[in-house]
Image (cartoon, helix red, strand yellow):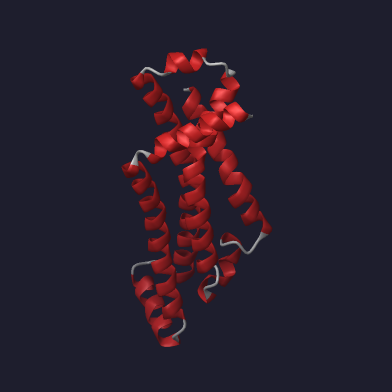
Length: 188
């Protein structure tokens, strides 16, 4: 266990030496949270004034879109993007970790180190998951809880932390799928 955590800590330190990768990771989470947050707060502000809501519905109807469909589509899209970012970034970070070891010439030494291949895989995976998981917990968690309080999103509250299933997906499902995809990225 000690060796596994040492490998994970080394991976986290290595990833923290790549500020552009961390910036892009944080910017991606911030972009989607702020973009959808702005849309939802705008729609909530419009929905609080009946005449503005009627005008918005009429404008959407002119282009052949229903108001309820826009809300349903945007909440589903936010959920999909929020929960697929974590596996994507873990796969990228775990894959670049192995590529970095090959380029630097440390891979043969790692393979000869007194650790099992499973410990090496799990250590690299934990190290690759640490930073993206932190961003996932902060941006998706806080963003979803803030947006879930909007009155216009009350029918979709189960997609923003108001249900047990959301919490299971947020705390277990997304990290589990990230671990699976990250392990594939490390092995491949």
